Length: 109
Image (cartoon, rainbow, N blue to C red):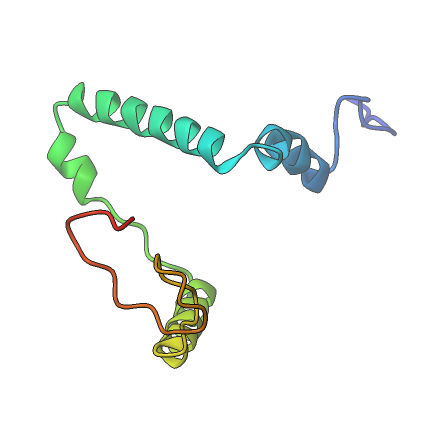
């Protein structure tokens, strides 16, 4: 069978395909993205609940690529270096004062 000299019009480069797929999410507010994420999580929970091998599936874990391990190490080092230099204002309006560490288990106003 002879090979086509040009690709069909519906074939687009991978980068363009990714841009098109991501386009609806780019303009979403954080709240809208949170709703989409919550919906995906609910779907995943339903799928897991329907599987007889739920525990085995939950144990599956892909290894991180070396590039991700290096990036995480760099980010952790940067975060450690930034500790103690947090100058966000607290709720009392004390500009420039370091923020106290977050209190776990309850929201701060």
